[in-house]
Image (cartoon, rainbow, N blue to C red; front, side, top):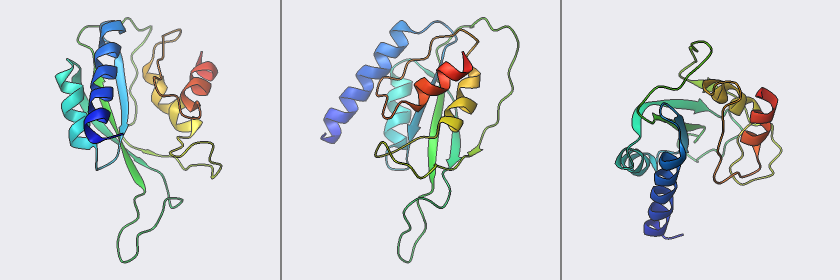
Length: 147
């Protein structure tokens, strides 16, 4: 996709997610350093309230760069739709994650199910999880495991 088409697709996605989300619902979006500023702008422009950026250390399985640094981290933007979501109890979650990829690649940019399970703990039991792009479905697997 051209950068303009990608931005339009993502902006439309954030707009639709906001439309269907309950007040207080959380949005988690993966971004690398190249797309971080665009993602921050698009998430905020579509009425989500930015809450933080969570770093994910993917480990040494990432590609090294000659005479440079390994791109072994990815960022997770956390935003929330204004309002309050009913929860049976409060949760206090880590703000950084070091979860390694297993090495098996069913997708170009795989995310470990274990990481998704940690991130999805923000969702109340029985809550709805939407993964608009799905990839190799680790979010779906984690959501089913967590109920």
